Each structure stands twice: as C-alpha cells, then as structure tokens.
Image (cartoon, rainbow, N blue to C red; front, side, top):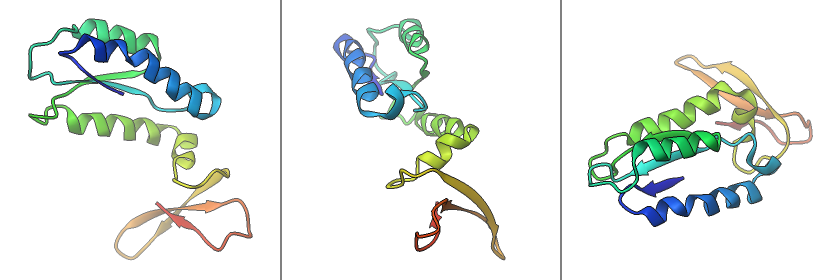
Length: 131
C-alpha cells in the first residue's frame, strides 16, 4: 500500500485499504506480504516517518519510504517484497497467477542456467508451469 507523505488524508485512508485486503484475500490477509510505502519523500511531508512506521508495525506490515520522482527507494520496495516471498515457501508456491491448487517447486537445470519449475500435485494437468 502506498500513501502520499504530503497528504494526511491519504494516510488516514490506509485503514480502509487494509480492510479491503483482509476482505478479499484468503485467511483474512494472513500469509500476504504487506508493505506500506510512504511516497514523495522528496517533498515537504505532513506525516512523520515515525508515525507511519509505527502504524505499519502495529498492522504487521513492512515499512519503507520512497520517491517515485527521484526513484529513491523504489528498487528497495520491490526487493523487500520479493525477499519476503522467497523466505516463505508457501508464499512462493501460492503466488503463481491462476493456480489455486497446492503446488510444489521442482528445481531443474539447463545447460546454461538453473531454472525453477512449478508442478501441480495433480497428474491430470498437461504439464509444468514455469516461473
């Protein structure tokens, strides 16, 4: 979730957005990597970093700040989410689009590089799903 550090209303709306996440994700949002990003840190802020960070932590969320304009912190936001997904095998296998069945990772090798292929537990599927 992203809010504008220069607009208090965008920060106050986070509560509603978090309710939406919990409503539309399995297990009330448990098992979903949630990251709060304060954007526009290149401008004068109206929400102190400490306030936003405390709110994020109280909701069990990661917290970072960034500036889309200057690109500061943008890469870190993506890397943080990917790292959390890679740390939890269940998150990794359950984030393949269009797949709701329990899946497993099968490590494979090619001549030039290592690949990972996701394979269904079901034998009636036509084949693997590469990620």
